[in-house]
Image: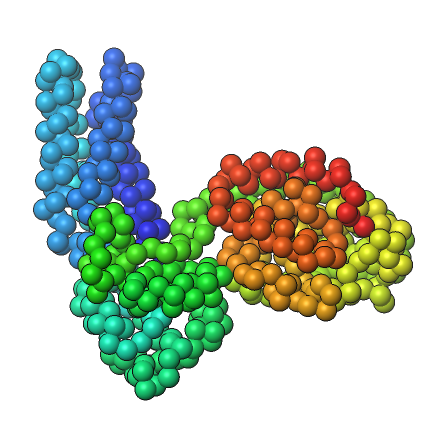
Length: 466
């Protein structure tokens, strides 16, 4: 559970409670149908928004503050009182103060103070509990050992209530230059081994503990590590160079330089998941007649199941099963995709040729997107063993696995730019990868919407689909 998400949810909860408490007192004591029917809602909304903004400015939504709610009581009370003082001053100068109910004004002040304070104690208990059982921590690995790593670890451990859990250290240097145990944490392996470890252990952050003066070594590390869907930070705790405060992110008070951020993270991931659910359901509903007709045609055309399941690379290189309508004869199907389908391929059925050319065979992947193994829009997933000239795609394109930093998609930026169908040359693989990386770096919901609505139009070009 991301601390950003947790504090964001609390903001929404507090805003809703403030609005509800103000509205309930208004309906109960003042009643509807008065001359000020639109004044009260505006005052309630403005005061509630101001409360959330000012509490945020006063650091009342930071993780240490949420873990220790008693430390924020005075700040919350002063902020809420200040807002009411402002309302009183504005009402006086606008000559409307006498029109508002004093009982409502005082009642909402007390009710608002209660809903800002009391839930925080329950929330604080939950956060402390989540911190103890690891649900709200960021799992981090230190890249680079020795004295520099020890200093960094000690600095992080001094920070009370930080959400970093150090899982170990990785370093290419041997034990004579980089001790096997640093500040109580073991050296778990080399940088090459770190990539596999980070995927399996679901690491959230890599902290590179190397001086910026070791430029070539830092660049060499980053070239290997950027394919991972994690935050990558360069520790700046011992660097002599000083940057502007805005250049840093912090773990407690330990400064870090942001090198890479995990793409489509926190609230962006929530928005994208909601997008997938809504449009997947719409797609399933509106395309169900086409899917039913296709299933019947496949059954009438050849023996075997209607659906074909294939193992492909998903998010973070996880192996997922992708659904398709079967387009080949059952005894000649190739789930591994070692032998790609070519033009006039005898393994493809009569119905299969049509549904492959029109991409109807991909429609069952709406269910993949609904269940969460795929996204509607993203880099198209390739079969685990897919090859080009007896080389795996990852062996053809340097950084190929960076495509898997986000969920793969039913359609993607590469597909609507004409790069669909057989990948029979290395250039096609490189171009697809380049376009996929462009999508990841420039993602937005609007970009997804554009790709989704352009897909049916671009599918009219069936030159490379067979």
